[in-house]
Amino acid sequence: MQGARLFWQRPEYFFRDCAECREFCIDERTGRPKLGPDGEAIRLGEKQKAPCEACPKRDKETGSIWAGFTAHNAMVFEICRASIELGALPRPGGIEDQEPASLQTLLLLKAIKDDCDATASAEHEEALLKALVR
Image (cartoon, rainbow, N blue to C red):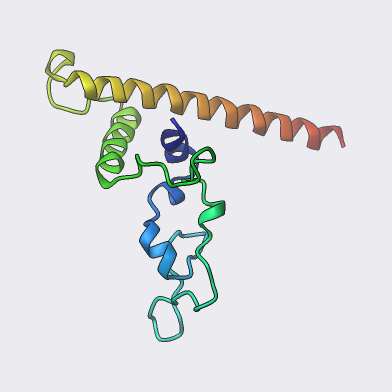
C-alpha cells in the first residue's frame, strides 16, 4: 500500500534510483542527479550522506526501503496507471482474457488512486476555504 500511495502522490520518489541517490546530489524537482558546469553528475562529498532517513520510500517501522520498489513493480504500476487513465484493460481482449493477479492489482491500484485523489481534493478544498475566510 505504501508503495502504491507513493506511486500516485509522489512519482518522482517512486521512480528514483536508490543507488543514484546514494552517489549523487539529487535535484528534488526533477529527481535526477544535479549536473555541474561540465555537464557531469555532481557526486556527494565524502562527508555528505544520502537523505535516506527522510525518503518516503523508507518504511517507518522497519527503517529500510520498502522491498516492493523493484523494476518489475514499477513496470506493473505503469501498466496499471495507463490502463486506469485510458479506461482499458491491461491485455487485449475482454475480462476473461486477463490474468487474475493483474486484475487484482489493477483494482487495488485504482482504489488507492481514488483514495489519494479524494484526500488531495479534500485538502485542496480545505485550503481554499481557509484562504477565503481570511
